[in-house]
Image 1 (tube, rainbow, N blue to C red):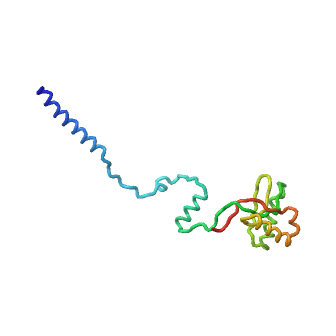
Image 2: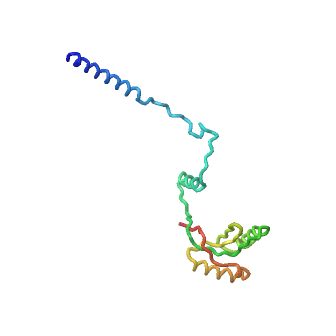
Image 3: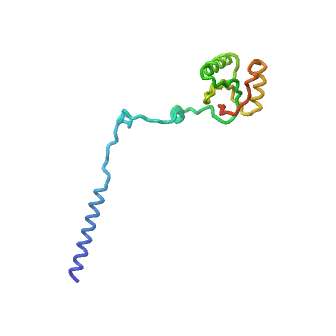
Length: 157
């Protein structure tokens, strides 16, 4: 019995000493922070991200906010062609001609296999129809191919 009593305190002392050594071994070392950024440490790193993320980050850093947003709306389509040899040039020529004479924004879109020219950013179909009526009064030659279409539009916030 005396041997057991002596053994317990010795075993307990060994466990405490081991615990202290393990705790000391796990203490974090102070590591000096690098003075360079990750980009300086990895100069050949290439970051791939959506351009919208880049724009949002630049806006945040510059303290600016985007004054426009995209939403479902209407535009007036005035041209559509799948003639691969001439459609792009015709669309660009029509846009160039009208840009000098009308205040609405003009968009050229390629929706395979069609080149399309669309005008405006209208929230309702009624607005698009009213503009189409005005446009046809000025350019009657556009009447045959022009009509309102649903599209993603850009509006001021």
